[in-house]
Length: 188
Ligand code: AR6
Image 1: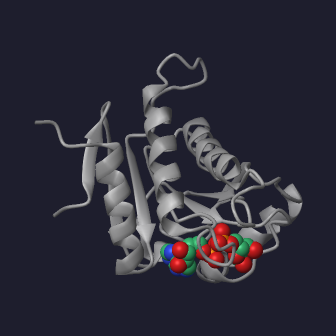
Image 2: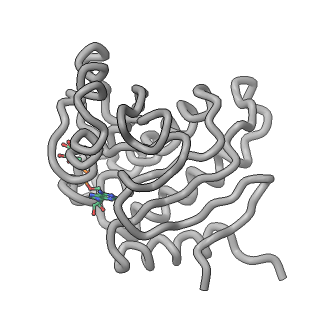
């Protein structure tokens, strides 16, 4: 069973592995508000991309939770890194769902603003920030669908043609696959 769906002239697909080896136009990093680097996917991206990414992050200075900013990608196999800040899970009663949705939405808007065609997401907030996978995957797919549905937005140029979720383990891959098929059911 392939992890791919087509919707409104775009493809949404899944890939299992390390995002730093994934060839695309823009990679979405799970960053923190200080853009200070750290562990997880953030650490891997800075490590593989080289110091120029951190130099740009330092110039930007920070990014509030739910927002996204972009830098060039250094030595990574893409042109841009979109640094997106998801919320820390605190039990689900502090607006985490809304903030995660915003982080996805603002990353997609940033991709659109940059004019990229293929954007690859890491699974925001589901590592160090402990957001439960199933809920996070459903939020991610809903935001992608809303974004692709929103054709009247004047800033939207419909540049993004492929959205890939890069999942680190097979376990996370299957959770996202379920969410993908739920949000984008196959036409009869
Ligand atoms: N490729 C793809 N996915 C990965 C990779 C990788 N190389 N490495 C980890 N993951 P996390 P967060 C998955 O912790 O929860 C950092 O220190 C991982 O399995 O990277 O948003 C930042 O600086 C998980 O499913 O991000 C922040 O301080 C997902 O990526 C904080 O962690 C996200 O896990 C952000 O925490």
